[in-house]
Length: 460
Ligand SMILES: *Cc1c(COP(=O)(O)O)cnc(C)c1O
Image (cartoon, rainbow, N blue to C red; front, side, top):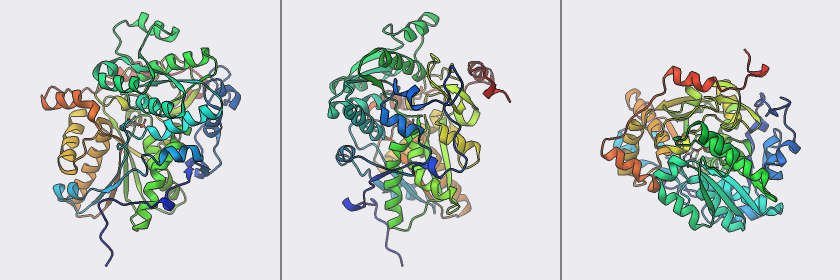
């Protein structure tokens, strides 16, 4: 008889991961290279070092090193809020009357309220090590901006945050929190950059988008001395930092001989999902497991489920290198749904490749169904989930209910990426039953696809 699994699966000090895991090293078919938008040749480190910290560039282009040591100066910061709790959802299992076992990794226990601090800490640390004095970034829902503000305060770096305008209006307390940690916050589009002014001229009433805020942040970084740009998702070095989530989870589950049948994560730019699944996907690629992996996205911004696999810009201003990814087109403007962290047109290139090759599945849900799941979860597990995370909850509940129907005793793991304390506007709309579900039409999507770069690599 095996021992009952505790509600929290702890890791002792000497069990904590000392390495990030680079999944690309174990992929036989690598993601396509990032291209220089002018020459359409693979980018070199030198091309990227004007924009990003050197160490991040090195990690971005590294397809071969499996394990990358986490520097002591970053582990020290991780110790303040990690390991993140890995929780057996006994109460949810009971409420659903499912034979399935459900586990979730709770990344929302730090003040920024999400997994984003894992990469923010790394990027601020490297900036300081490289002698930079300031950083710029964008933030959608505000979680990344908060995480970067916290990390920049800790490592003593100045930070400017371009916050998507709709989010800065929907989430005034996020804005206040970012400013409390000392960052300079600018709603985007703004008239502080050429990219912002161009977008405002074309569409003065725009609610903004992550892609547009990215253009503004990059422009300011490039024009400022000893300043670089940091990005909170999408890129491979961010996935690498987020592998701390999967590393901790796998070590803890292995201790209890638990092997997930299904791993689920919400997908905005793909970093939390990529980080959670990394070591498990490594085993699947090696033929050692049959785990299924499911990305969950909003029906209003369906990059995987309705997007195209093509080279695209990372920003609306079309200034970044070209990434081969599932994308809705950098000109796609998602509707103002409440999962701000999932309103991005594209998806990380490694996950895109895995999806293309059939190792990863994807589903999408409308937000009212997602909030039904969020409230159901909150009532039994006690944690108020972020709207983004609730996409994963919804998929986990659906899988558990499928087990109830078939009688299968599957093991389901999902990423609870954050808490929803700053999303009360969304919960108020849900409670008042004024929440609407918007699904883009095929014609809406075609308008986005029309903004894809017209280059030979994108021809069939
Ligand atoms: C940013 C964010 C997401 C989206 O994460 P990606 O790594 O970009 O997919 C999900 N949940 C929360 C709480 C977030 O803050």
